[in-house]
Image (cartoon, rainbow, N blue to C red; front, top):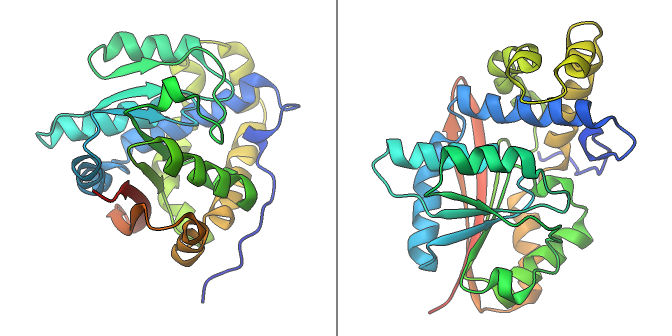
Length: 263
């Protein structure tokens, strides 16, 4: 039985939360994805999506700190596949962090420095590119989620959504073996605001509590297969849609949902 979806708040969505705390949570998630090999199983479905779309560039919407795109590109290289060029974008750009990512992967990572609204992509930014939202689509309530998908059908070469778990709070426990060290080492590994992050992480339980809450809520916000297909049903038959799952250790199950134009 699937749990009902609830749109509770997450700390890293709130403007009133200190930027250092939001960054600590987001950066820890990126390290968790890398250290836990959580995106390794996504390589196959993502490669299939790229081949079907024909796109060589992907507009990475809601890119956050840029970690998911970097990690997926590295996983593809390890699998002997050539990654696309990712264009990082977000409504709240993190240019300092994106510049670091671009310097580390100049052939793979670029970014759009201005704010990008995922529901209204400018034609010059979206033209000829596919779109991806990695581990972030659950943040959007249904009306915005539908608008994102509708805009992608109107102006992209395809759209790819992935989440690190299904709608099951127990699935978040699979992040814990890597997430706790990733959060604890954040003040050392972070490129900025180290003192503030140390206060939130080492001198208080704030970062751990906020991260645990956000992770729990994320599992309740994830859209199910049926809900995703219901969202795209009114968009006509211009796109072909697929839903997949993939596994990662110790017992995690991620999901992906993608659509490409019918040729």
